[in-house]
Image 1 (cartoon, helix red, strand yellow):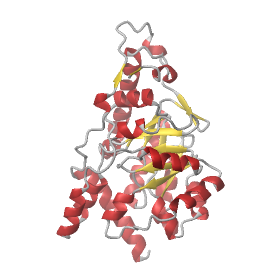
Image 2 (image 1 turned 180 degrees about the vertical axis):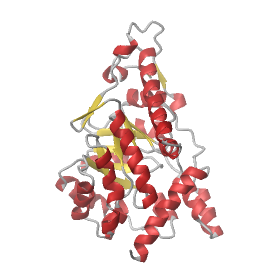
Image 3 (image 1 turned 90 degrees about the vertical axis):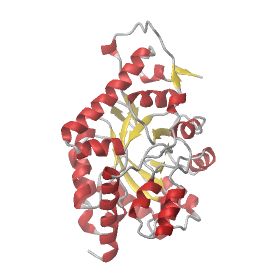
Image 4 (image 1 turned 45 degrees about the vertical axis):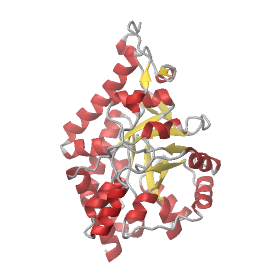
Length: 342
């Protein structure tokens, strides 16, 4: 394994360790405390008949939940992808893997991502590549390889300008990327979803991406894991550490970012992620127009504590969602979309 691949794999392990051990949560409120669902004191529903299922890209899910992209690319991260994929299969929910860049430059690491499909043969799975890599020669061919690696139903192109700017090894050339995204979105046989990683996507960029052929937007707003904080813990240079600290709370809060994409066409997949705490935040996200709601660090911490802890965490989120639907008189997700207090 060459030095570059070793460094990338080591960085993935370091990111995982920091997310598990350090305080990397943004202090910026997600905004969901200011979002309210209609309260029906007499909901006139049988709780057991409530249907939280949805269909995304032709696959029926038992709940509008996404295990958000987190990891892969090393022996340690393989174990987490295996465990998370088993949970996605058990609960029939969606899952995304972390950036597959390292597996595309070294053949020995494909299984750290491919394990997701092995453990979740029927799940809705998303491949993942960073947008900055499009300026490093990662064109259509590598995107296809990323999709094929786990027989994915779609691919996330993650937009992480802040993280790249803060990393000493980051790629800061973000010029000409929209045209490259458009070419890939038009040529790939699966949907391409643009995903932020904790800073939120602004409405103007979201519209440009959709006009370029993107099939979905994951806002991934401020309020959850701050990758500026994660990068801060990696730095030994005091100047770079201070730089990271300056930008810990940079971006658009999740609820605001989600509100900014509600006017996009109905066929565009809308994903709410970034600091969601529970199933009530999921219900609020769906009422605001989201199709899926994603959880990352909350579930990686649960997985770190074992399979039972992970199952309990997902079960609780699903139960919290159903209780929110019950209390607002929504027997399905379509009705839930009418229960937002404006």
